[in-house]
Image (cartoon, rainbow, N blue to C red; front, side, top):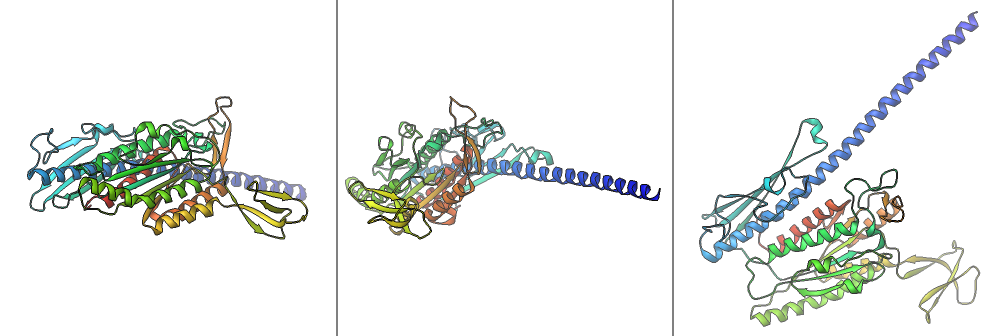
Length: 449
């Protein structure tokens, strides 16, 4: 009797413990899920806010520069909107030809641009303000998140731009056809996803259009800006390459880009190195033609990749741990492999040399005074829809190794830690180009803040 009661008591205790454990696990899971959702939601909100603020800073800089140059040229503020930006007037971004993404409350019409002139300080100040529509922050009662950017330009120091050369090294490999966002569990595209190449085209077109607006202000007969584009996969895509030229990239040039092939960033970075070596002379000839004093141009390279290098030449590393023996055939320019030790063969490994060679080119560019910005694009770890019409659920993955290898290369090439930007999707890519644009403009024109 006692034995039975004791067994029943133990069984009851065990069941109670199990129920408590299940309850604790459920509670822990619920809390963890809430935290995860919160982190993801906050990241989305922050990305939208950063994108809006970066774009608003571009508008503030451009408007303040135009306002300061007008007064420098006319010794008075504009009297009408046809002449320029009037003192103390608040415009909306739509009136001035700008647009904003759906994450901005009310769109461009609700983004305010105020222009103020201070004749005592001889400065034009432009303030841009608006609000984004958050997703996660609404849970805490925040229906909007405000953003503000300001730019101050001195009338006395206002210049159209220092001479500059800008080369874009852009990944056009096959993975650029994939979605920019992680696939659903079914393998299909999530809401709002788009091919990476579409995001790249849009971002470069926006970058070029707004840069032209900001740097062509008040330009005289001397051409000061040169641009070029080096799309690449396993090599430079020659039919889409845009040689360095005075002026800015056109939409037709940018929209020619198509994704295909493997990835090798060495050829385009080598080409960028050669281009930049010739840029001083190109600007010198233009200064002579325009009858102006020569100023050495500032040089910039923007290097974007959505993955690690997968092709190119190899380095041989001797090792007794390898199962294979290799010999380089100079007549065919390739490595021969053998399972046994034959004449002229050596035991070891072949390691892709593309990263090493790319970094060498980057180091030489930096040594000659070129500033390099890099973008790691759509490298969030996980599965992505390939966008194959014949198989709408076909996916490919970005692994931790792929991400870390790509980030390591891009960090090594960037001129500073701040010059490497991560962009996980198309919207963040546009924001990344905006951030780089702001950095370039601040070096080319005299903006105080």
